[in-house]
Image (cartoon, rainbow, N blue to C red; front, side, top):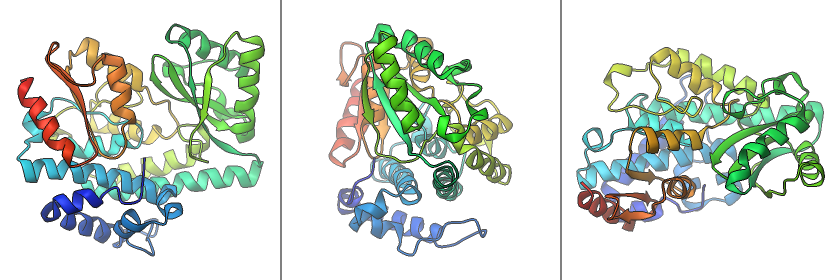
Length: 356
């Protein structure tokens, strides 16, 4: 989630940390290491602060802006409040784009490398969408479906029955990549016990919804997401290929990581450098198994304290609904916090101390 001025309150409250951080961000993005690096005509910090909104919400700007702002908030925690990330955090994860910020927080990937990576990934994804529209026509995007919790499994089954292809691990439609883009629809995210996100041809998604309501005994609430790119679908295959090339050229110090990071693709921690490179690149075309990840951490690993760092509250809300907590829960000795504004830092730190 991006909005003009999303870093302003942080810069005002913590200029000593935030101003140098944003200057570093601009310097990294203004220093190309290859001809593939995206060079902005306007510094990203200026776009974040002043807009216009059309520039900030454009994928090649929005994605690095969100990732960088998330890491800036973490730097404030560390440098202004003495938060020891390595000692206070046991495991991390991030939803889709957020996986890159998570890997920076765990020190699997250097911030500079991740920022360049995210920017090039966003450029490639934009090209994938543009190429699909140019060659096949039609409209592409993503639509969230919300159903009754006890109906999710049958809804997913009905979706794949209509689309006429089998389902792989995590709800991935194995044969979708063999169809022309105009006919492609896949489940991009399994976010919670009652929410999934479809990605692909909007025309095909609309036909699917009509079929579900008329013949499939399902009437999910459908919400079009604010994107014209079908993320986590086979249309993004060129972006996945490019990401693999970038990752193969990126130094990843797995042994020096501070704590494990859970993969969107497997819903389990990355276990090696080679696996990280494979899964982080294929994430472009794979289902984000967010619900499975949260359930594993909650039910198998016994995580009781959660914090979401950076713009937006979607991830925090999804976690809170699944684990049954919002803010501090003194009865259960845990909590679910979000840090999107400076005033929330002390609330989180106080809650953390009181639930130790």
